Image 1 (spheres, rainbow, N blue to C red):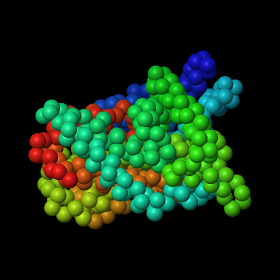
Image 2: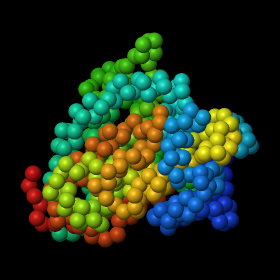
Image 3: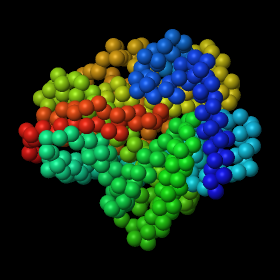
Image 4: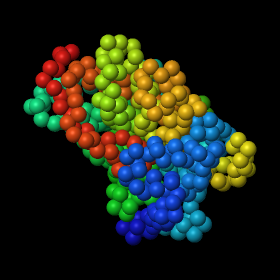
Length: 439
């Protein structure tokens, strides 16, 4: 089994890793962004260098764009579809994969995940999932999210000894994983295990993984898949009030339902959409508000500013930095020919700093009138299923945090996650402060 996994890594991630390193040595900016942790920590100056090319720049393995209008056109256009790695690998690598086979379980960017299929399959999956994952259902979770936030903040207050506490480990990760666990009907006792599995699974979004990270990602995805298969059986026998119980039982107009692989892929996608992006949103938001105490004070004086502040956080420091699309036919973008099969990487983090769309884009401003025009949740038919949930959780988490602990301050340098697609922190030491406000 290990030999098959290693062969799959060599034919996919290993090959891509080799290509990225070669392109980086040749001076390709995007490749340098992909392989250099220092550049990943602050990619925005490099986005600006790529902005000089319009509408497309030569990326590491494909075309790339940091322009808001171009990215939006690609994400919404019918001329572009999903860009799964197995569709863009060289022919010899695809031949190797055909011989050794794919992983037994589907990841968030593998079929039949909604992120990796085009209509009509995507239309069917999204229609079914949207029947249970509704705006009303998300709104109904707000009160419970407040309860979870307050409980975690009580625990922070109880643990405060005047020494640094990791805000990510003790709050930013626990809040969304608790909420998504309840959505999926996951027992609270599994919360820590899901954090561990989710961290490994998140790496599967990146290209050019090292062998060790790839092996862990594969193992964590397989573990999640196996657990969910058993979980679906339990939910069929003893359904709960959670959204996944409804989805397991749901039948479409033609009498069809999601298969086990489709349910597993959808559950993984809900886990990612409702957890990974939100952890990053909370951490990135806390960092920005630490750096802008005047705006933090304005939010304390006028809580009605919070929804727009959350969108400004999403724009300014997007939890998801890039996604790719593949041309389904010969087309063009703003006069530039794009041939069928060509891949265009939409750099969401760069598009959200486009000066032609956002005035003074490098300035964090909770009053920004068009903050919601960001593409942090992508756009078009693949617009993030968990966007409403992430916004709500981000607002509740950050507002309750700073209301409860107005003296909250950094206690050292936060540490960025070693991921390329997802941008956030995996550690953020803070001092809670002795003047905690009772809720």
